[in-house]
Image (cartoon, rainbow, N blue to C red; front, side, top):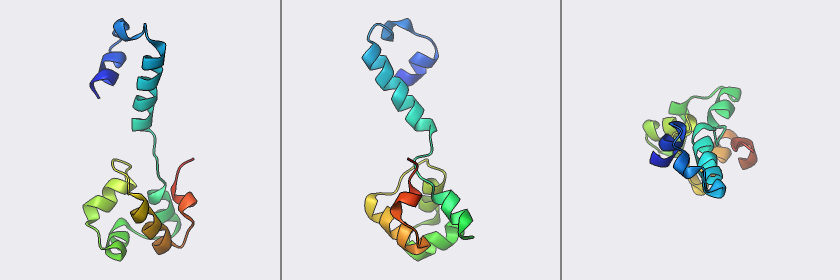
Length: 95
């Protein structure tokens, strides 16, 4: 995100509007936080990304992106993942 890069470099022109700066900082922080726990739950269940991809009929690269939090599954896929792993959807989400 270009604006986050500007803030990281210390451009002070954005600091005048604290609400805008706070919003951008939150967006930047969201980019670095894991939003889901799919990888953790897979490990707890002793299952692999490949196994999950086969169960869901998804490309293993897609499941890998979900597990690394570089992409997020939609709600329908999240519910399917919970069903396959026999957990509540809440256990897959970082709160």
